[in-house]
Length: 123
Image 1 (tube, helix red, strand yellow):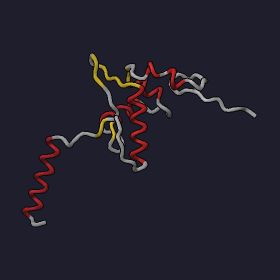
Image 2 (image 1 turned 135 degrees about the vertical axis):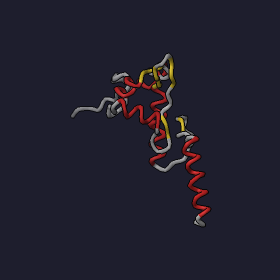
Image 3 (image 1 turned 60 degrees about the vertical axis):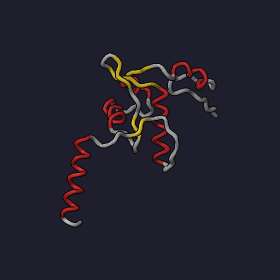
Image 4 (image 1 turned 45 degrees about the vertical axis):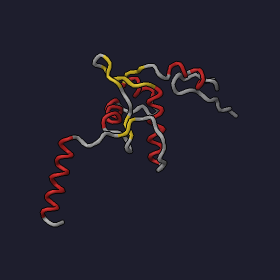
């Protein structure tokens, strides 16, 4: 019978101490294309952009713009996945991923206008 050998998704090494060995690479900037390649399930690049712009279940992927290019880190990816899992499980906790942003000024204006119209109609 074949014995299960744990491996690290980030480096594809088959040693049990991989997590400790990778701590130096957690904060290294990676492009969003690299992030898509290293994420389980290999989501499309547009999915990674959607995660950073709209988020999933109230959680957005943290990124930064450096020299006109968008980057993230392996740590931010891991925190994003953990926060999405917690949100999906209904757990409210301290997550380091960026929460979704407030409505834009245009959207807030539209909301106020709709509320004023409803008030005027007595609804």
